[in-house]
Image 1 (cartoon, rainbow, N blue to C red):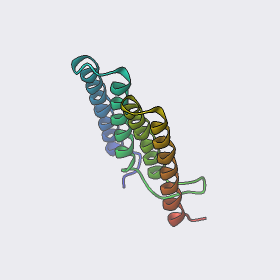
Image 2: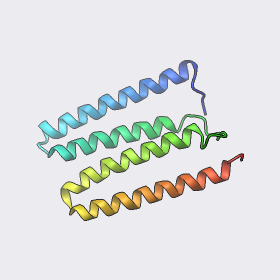
Image 3: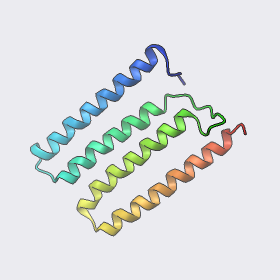
Length: 125
C-alpha cells in the first residue's frame, strides 16, 4: 500500500480523473448515442465513478488508527456504496421500484457487514 504523498498520490488523482472523464463519455454515448433513458445513463456514470473510488481507494493504507478504520476500508466502502447507487438507478428502469429498494437495502447491509468484519480483524484498540 502506498501513502498519500509524492508521485504515487498524484498518479491516484490522474487515474481518478481519467475514470471520471471516461464515465462522462459513457454517459453521453448512452444518452444521446444509444438513446437510453437519463436514469440508465446517470446510473452508468455513477457506477463507473464508484469503481474509480473503490479501485483507487484500495491502494491507500489499510492500517486502522484510534479514530476508526483505515483509509483503504473507508474509501472502498464509499466506492461500493456509489456502485450500489449506480446499479439501483440502472435496474430501476427495468424492474419494479420495490425490487430496486430491496437491492439497495440488502447491498447496504452487506457492505456494512463486510466493513465491520474487516475492521474487527485489524483493530488495535
